[in-house]
Amino acid sequence: MSFSKAWVPSHITGFFRAHRKDDPHHSGSVGAGLCLALGATTTIQPAPEIDETEILLNGVISEAPVSRFVAEKLAGGAGPVRIRTELEMPFGAGFGASGAGALGAAYALNSCFDLGLTANQAAAVAHEAEVTFKTGLGDVIAQNSGGLVVRLHPGAPGTGIIDRIPVPPLAISYVVNGPISTKDVLTDANVMKAVNTAGEAALKDLLKKPTFANFMRLSKSFTLQSGLASDWALQAIEAVEAEGGLASMIMLGDAVFSWGGAAALQDFGEVHTTTISQRGANLD
Image (cartoon, rainbow, N blue to C red):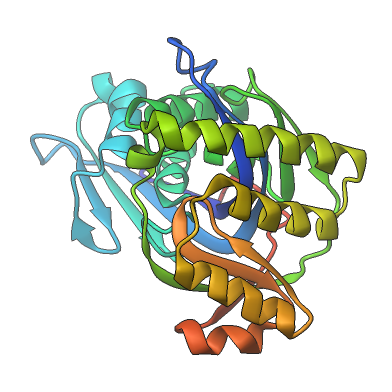
């Protein structure tokens, strides 16, 4: 094939507990999050006319180390490729943009060069890239599935264990105040101690009553207990709840998502609405 194209949903985490191991395939997180219809479309094309692989994010040449890691691992011997990724989701605000780009690249490279990898095998390379560059722990395994994903055992696709809570394509609104450095949070021992304690408790409670509404409530509780939320985020959550909706912080970004009560978010920035994606990563 002269080119291949893949699509990957965004993913927002409601709560999590990090698990780090020396082997990136056994590193990851447990917790729960939503895949959203905001996606990333990645196109792969062999490019023998250039000296090294070129990556464009929304049309702009980028180093994109996570996607580059995937390209070098899967197509390093096939010569340079051109990777074009169009992101519909915000970057750096907890929507799994780097995971989506890496996973899309893995799927498209697998197809373009007929590598013969299963979905989990291709996705495991994207997960390894995320863990290596400390840009995420649980996005890829969720994005590989779609829906409301519960991460039960940490690790890459094929190693980690997930389940899903069946949900319709509900409308989810969100507002973004700014980015949070995932790497800074994941490498701060004091912060992660509170995060891990709160995340483990939230997962246990979700499994007792695995519903969408309970996921939303537990995500809000995790937001409070983890200490990660800014005053802006806490005020936005309170405003949504005052209107009868449910809301929480997006992990890890200074951003809030809500189910219902979206009008209340208008006081906190530009409000966007999308839906829960029922499909995970796939070839277009």
